[in-house]
Length: 298
Image 1 (tube, one colour):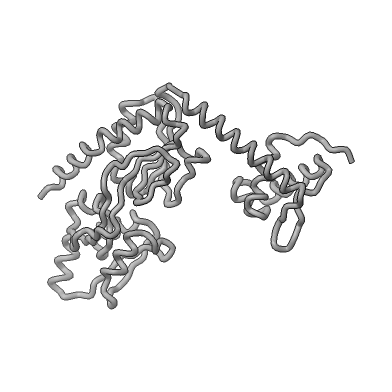
Image 2 (image 1 turned 60 degrees about the vertical axis):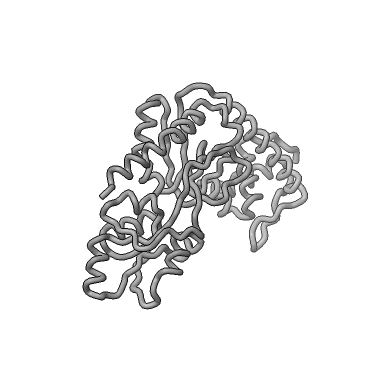
């Protein structure tokens, strides 16, 4: 059978199966149906007149031809990413899409700052993505990451904006009632999959053994439950201190201190949109904190 030329659009399907080892994994990566991946792989193999994968019970395993295809296609993917990065990095217009990934709590905290930036740069389409998972700046899932961390990736360019601390908080009314009635404490905890977060570690150290527990699967969920007067929780101080409804019960636990980092891919440093966002946030964030502090002063 004579080999035919494959389409450029076939390559991501082969790469996804190589990366994940299964049709279902590739389908999740590409956000398409399982059957679509199956048809595209079958079509590629038919065009090339060669088997790229062995179909085994444990998944799709690359043949020697598949391994060769994978190595060459990875190089092609990296080259295309480099071209995209360089072209994006040379964009000097203060217009177009700027995608910023952050956490839900940082977005809540800095929403007024985002409004100011958007007002000052109306031709920039600001896309704010709040996710627990970190978007991949290397693969251009986002242009900028605004994240609390103690270990920022070395291969990104960035700035440490300000320190992040954590302490234990409760609603003033709840805490007063607790002391007056000598009641059993209720603690608001994160789900077990977030056990590595500073909030979970502080909670584990500070929560009494006989405490009642309510569980939430996000930092903002914990914050809203504390603000509603349901119980006590460890929170980042940037949330706890800006709300005069809450009272801090413990001093910040410095073992879990981090910093709020502003990060971008190094090839985007010359992008006007990225540069404008970096300069705006770096310049105005301390003014924003000062306003909140003054607003919530007793």
